[in-house]
Amino acid sequence: MMNDDVPSGYSTRLYNDDLAPRKGPGTWKTGNLFNWWMSAWHSLADYTAAVSLLALGLLGWQLAFALCLGVVVIYLISNLAGVAGQKIGVPFPVFARISFGVFGANIPALLRAIVAVAWYGIQTYLASQVILVLAVKTIPSAESLLGPSFLGLSALGWISFLLLWSAQLFVLHRGMESIRRLSDFAGPAIWVAMIALTIWTLHRAEWTIDWSYHVGSVPLGAGDTVIQILAAASLIVALLSGPVLNFSDFTRLASSRRSVIRGNQLGLLVNGIAFCLVSVVITLASVRVYGKAINDPIILISEIDNITVLLLAILAVGISTAGINIILNFVSPAFDFANIAPRHIDFKKGGLITAILSVVILPWNLYSNPVVISVFLGGIGALMGPLFGIMMADYYLIRRGRVTIAHLYTEDPSGKYFYTRGFNKNSVAALIISGIATLAIAFIPAMHALAPFTWPLGTTLGAIVCLAINRLRPNTPDNITETPATALQPTKTQTTL
Image (cartoon, rainbow, N blue to C red):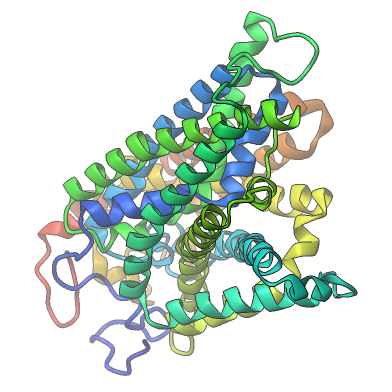
């Protein structure tokens, strides 16, 4: 919440209680972060995206390997972002002030918010379809509400969407601790649904799957196979590039560096790989049942004729998807919008803005239009790589992890992160240069072959350009004298960790 008692030297244009540095030791342990990753991975959209990569022409086992390779990369980059977030103890938009300036941080924050709001609406819609299936299966008369639509959604669709939309808003209103508790429940709950769906689909497939299944008349050659495996791994990394970018929103609450790394090990290397393998198994089993790979789990769930299994699967998927949506797509824009005007917008108001915008964009129409998804979300998403590369290069290689917390909240021109009128022109220039390159890769037909590699190329280019510009015109002359955040002593005017 917002607070008029602003520490001396802090600006009300940059500070409120929700954007404040962590006070005292963190409360999130290894288990909480493990459950966070379980919730983060197991979404309907992630499942669809993962198994849709069969379209690249890979064999079933090759896709499984590619997905696991992508998980390993996500683990490595999550450690970079997560450990930094735990050390500094501030939410993502405040962390971005280090490299972009106290006001320039709104650039990466709003870019991340745009992607998150769109996906929040889409994920809410997808989860509401599970509720719709439950209503039709258990209340036959509900089918009459599937008739004429309003703004592209039937009456039952609107009821299901607004029901889930309200439930998610209620959780957000209760704050980050409620989100942690939901994550602790939602993570294990989705495994209940996944296991039930796996057993049911395998049973219908007579417990037989073909690991050599592939899309296309002939398998890929050796060279093309390697390229497509790397492409699939890259696309999976890009899928979670947004949540990884704002990972500090959560790891700032972690109790130690070790808890972050251990949580990532269990949540990614163990749970993430298991999820990928189970997703491929379900998909390959669906080939035997339907004669083709089914990449929409709602179709599989709707086919369940055992009411007990159906209820179990639908409730688990519905609850867990709501939890996933809040974790990945609600928290980030709530902080990001609060960062625009901390004096007037706190975390809860930022969340309300997110929720309202998620309805205004009519996400079901957005989701059904591949062109909009590709151009709008694909274009903004292509900038997640450059942002990550710039922020990590700035933090680890330019500043060597040394940050003065109090200066993140001051608009005094002498502040270390005020730069030029609150903007770090070096980072902004690096984002423009690397961003143009990644957008060109994403949208110029002649560069189509490189499109799956937008995230790694963007990250690498963003980091290199950031380092080059800062070498040509250093704007942190006192960088070497900055004090590590963990060594600073808290005072009234400077909260440090």
